[in-house]
Amino acid sequence: MIDPGHNGGNADHLEEINRLVNIGNGIKPCNTTGTATADGYTEAEFNWDVATLVVASLRERGAEVILTRPDNEGWGPCITERAATGNLNQADAVISIHADGGPDDGRGFHVIHPANVAGLTDDIYEASLRLARALHTAYLATSMPVADYIGEGGLSERDDLGGLNLSDVPAVFLEAGNMRSAADVVLLTDAEFQTDIADAVVAALIAFLAG
Image 1 (cartoon, rainbow, N blue to C red):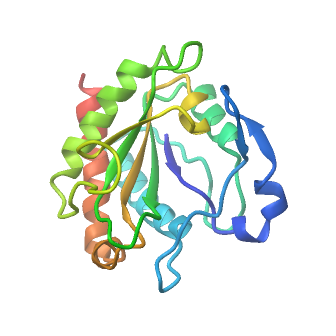
Image 2: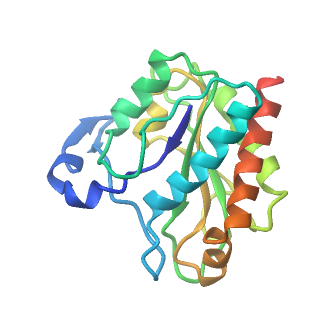
């Protein structure tokens, strides 16, 4: 399952996306608007642009792929629904595509994997970590550097993300770069680099599924 984070219409449905939902060890908003570049290229649009490249490439290889949203025009779905979609379809792996809204002077990508939370992620912790490492390795082949402002060497463990906490299948988040960094934005808005991102995601899934 490929999960393009956020959605293009979220900003017009703040009441709906601000509704609190249970993420297993706390409550968080159903969804958020995401970040954007200084020129207004939204994270939701970026996520969708990359996701469509990933899906097309995977399907060309014969993979069965599902998306958590059909386009970039609507709002939601909630993080709880996104996790449920992967669970109900018994996805072999879930990659949620994002770009970060970090500090202006921070650069780079990082991969988020679930912490080992008893009763929530303990059953997917090891497999998700293996998926995160596969994605991290594949992404190193792009020209985006490892994040210098968050995580450890491009990996970040989190216990506060509903999309990870509620997943019963291996799941990770890719933060493909920092949309607040002028240097990163040059890459993130480049069509050729977006193809490189998609290639990295596909390569990571192939490596992960090969065991």
